[in-house]
Length: 144
Image 1 (cartoon, rainbow, N blue to C red):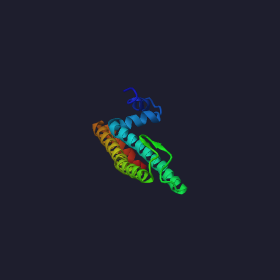
Image 2: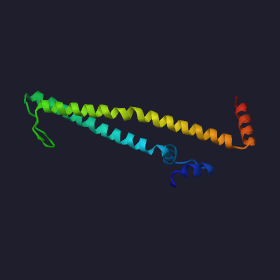
Image 3: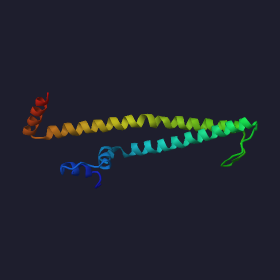
Protein backbone atom coordinates (compact mmCIF):
# COMPACT_ATOMS: atom_id res chain seq x y z
CA UNK A 1 0.00 0.00 0.00
CA UNK A 2 2.89 2.32 0.74
CA UNK A 3 4.31 1.73 -2.73
CA UNK A 4 1.01 2.61 -4.38
CA UNK A 5 1.15 6.13 -3.10
CA UNK A 6 4.93 6.55 -3.29
CA UNK A 7 4.71 8.02 -6.79
CA UNK A 8 2.03 10.50 -5.74
CA UNK A 9 3.88 11.45 -2.55
CA UNK A 10 7.15 11.97 -4.46
CA UNK A 11 5.40 14.10 -7.09
CA UNK A 12 3.72 16.28 -4.45
CA UNK A 13 7.07 16.73 -2.64
CA UNK A 14 8.66 17.90 -5.89
CA UNK A 15 10.78 14.75 -6.21
CA UNK A 16 10.92 12.44 -9.18
CA UNK A 17 9.16 9.14 -8.40
CA UNK A 18 10.99 5.87 -8.95
CA UNK A 19 10.16 3.75 -11.97
CA UNK A 20 8.89 0.96 -9.72
CA UNK A 21 6.55 3.31 -7.85
CA UNK A 22 5.29 4.74 -11.14
CA UNK A 23 4.56 1.31 -12.59
CA UNK A 24 2.78 0.19 -9.46
CA UNK A 25 0.65 3.33 -9.50
CA UNK A 26 -0.26 2.81 -13.18
CA UNK A 27 -0.94 -0.91 -13.06
CA UNK A 28 -2.48 -1.36 -9.62
CA UNK A 29 -5.98 -2.12 -10.96
CA UNK A 30 -4.61 -4.59 -13.51
CA UNK A 31 -2.51 -6.91 -11.36
CA UNK A 32 -4.37 -10.02 -12.54
CA UNK A 33 -3.88 -9.21 -16.21
CA UNK A 34 -0.19 -8.43 -15.67
CA UNK A 35 0.29 -11.68 -13.71
CA UNK A 36 -1.50 -13.66 -16.44
CA UNK A 37 0.67 -12.01 -19.08
CA UNK A 38 3.83 -12.84 -17.12
CA UNK A 39 2.91 -16.48 -16.58
CA UNK A 40 1.85 -16.88 -20.22
CA UNK A 41 5.14 -15.40 -21.44
CA UNK A 42 7.19 -17.71 -19.21
CA UNK A 43 5.23 -20.82 -20.23
CA UNK A 44 5.45 -19.83 -23.88
CA UNK A 45 9.23 -19.51 -23.55
CA UNK A 46 9.50 -22.96 -21.96
CA UNK A 47 7.31 -24.48 -24.69
CA UNK A 48 9.41 -22.87 -27.41
CA UNK A 49 12.73 -23.96 -25.91
CA UNK A 50 11.46 -27.52 -25.41
CA UNK A 51 10.22 -27.56 -29.02
CA UNK A 52 13.61 -26.46 -30.32
CA UNK A 53 15.49 -28.95 -28.15
CA UNK A 54 13.32 -31.86 -29.32
CA UNK A 55 13.61 -30.77 -32.97
CA UNK A 56 17.40 -30.80 -32.59
CA UNK A 57 17.18 -34.30 -31.09
CA UNK A 58 14.96 -35.44 -33.98
CA UNK A 59 17.46 -34.04 -36.50
CA UNK A 60 20.39 -35.74 -34.75
CA UNK A 61 18.53 -39.04 -34.60
CA UNK A 62 17.57 -38.90 -38.28
CA UNK A 63 21.14 -37.87 -39.26
CA UNK A 64 22.57 -40.96 -37.58
CA UNK A 65 20.03 -43.21 -39.28
CA UNK A 66 18.60 -44.45 -35.98
CA UNK A 67 14.89 -44.91 -35.37
CA UNK A 68 15.02 -44.19 -31.65
CA UNK A 69 16.47 -41.21 -29.83
CA UNK A 70 18.93 -41.68 -26.99
CA UNK A 71 17.13 -39.39 -24.55
CA UNK A 72 14.81 -39.76 -21.59
CA UNK A 73 11.70 -37.56 -21.55
CA UNK A 74 9.98 -38.28 -18.26
CA UNK A 75 8.36 -41.68 -18.59
CA UNK A 76 9.58 -42.08 -22.18
CA UNK A 77 12.91 -43.89 -22.51
CA UNK A 78 14.44 -43.89 -25.99
CA UNK A 79 11.32 -42.64 -27.79
CA UNK A 80 10.94 -43.10 -31.51
CA UNK A 81 11.14 -40.25 -33.99
CA UNK A 82 7.37 -40.42 -34.58
CA UNK A 83 6.74 -40.04 -30.84
CA UNK A 84 9.07 -37.04 -30.73
CA UNK A 85 7.18 -35.46 -33.65
CA UNK A 86 3.91 -35.94 -31.70
CA UNK A 87 5.45 -34.27 -28.64
CA UNK A 88 6.63 -31.36 -30.80
CA UNK A 89 3.14 -31.03 -32.27
CA UNK A 90 1.61 -30.84 -28.78
CA UNK A 91 4.20 -28.25 -27.71
CA UNK A 92 3.51 -26.16 -30.81
CA UNK A 93 -0.23 -26.27 -30.08
CA UNK A 94 0.42 -25.24 -26.46
CA UNK A 95 2.57 -22.34 -27.68
CA UNK A 96 -0.12 -21.35 -30.16
CA UNK A 97 -2.75 -21.37 -27.40
CA UNK A 98 -0.48 -19.22 -25.24
CA UNK A 99 -0.27 -16.65 -28.03
CA UNK A 100 -3.90 -15.67 -27.39
CA UNK A 101 -3.26 -14.00 -24.02
CA UNK A 102 0.14 -12.79 -25.21
CA UNK A 103 -1.46 -10.91 -28.09
CA UNK A 104 -4.58 -9.62 -26.34
CA UNK A 105 -3.41 -8.67 -22.84
CA UNK A 106 -0.73 -6.05 -23.65
CA UNK A 107 -3.14 -4.05 -25.80
CA UNK A 108 -5.92 -4.37 -23.22
CA UNK A 109 -3.64 -3.33 -20.34
CA UNK A 110 -2.38 -0.31 -22.28
CA UNK A 111 -5.88 0.74 -23.36
CA UNK A 112 -7.32 0.41 -19.85
CA UNK A 113 -4.38 2.27 -18.32
CA UNK A 114 -4.71 5.12 -20.82
CA UNK A 115 -8.48 5.30 -20.33
CA UNK A 116 -8.00 5.40 -16.56
CA UNK A 117 -5.43 8.19 -16.83
CA UNK A 118 -7.72 10.24 -19.08
CA UNK A 119 -10.68 9.72 -16.77
CA UNK A 120 -8.69 10.73 -13.68
CA UNK A 121 -7.31 13.78 -15.50
CA UNK A 122 -10.80 14.84 -16.61
CA UNK A 123 -12.23 14.37 -13.10
CA UNK A 124 -9.35 16.28 -11.54
CA UNK A 125 -9.86 19.16 -13.96
CA UNK A 126 -13.64 19.30 -13.50
CA UNK A 127 -13.34 19.15 -9.70
CA UNK A 128 -10.80 21.98 -9.62
CA UNK A 129 -11.90 25.48 -8.78
CA UNK A 130 -12.85 27.88 -11.57
CA UNK A 131 -9.69 29.93 -10.99
CA UNK A 132 -7.50 26.85 -11.55
CA UNK A 133 -9.47 25.85 -14.66
CA UNK A 134 -9.27 29.35 -16.11
CA UNK A 135 -5.54 29.59 -15.40
CA UNK A 136 -4.97 26.26 -17.12
CA UNK A 137 -7.03 27.33 -20.15
CA UNK A 138 -5.08 30.61 -20.43
CA UNK A 139 -1.78 28.79 -20.11
CA UNK A 140 -2.60 26.36 -22.89
CA UNK A 141 -3.74 29.27 -25.12
CA UNK A 142 -0.45 31.10 -24.59
CA UNK A 143 1.58 28.07 -25.66
CA UNK A 144 0.07 28.08 -29.15
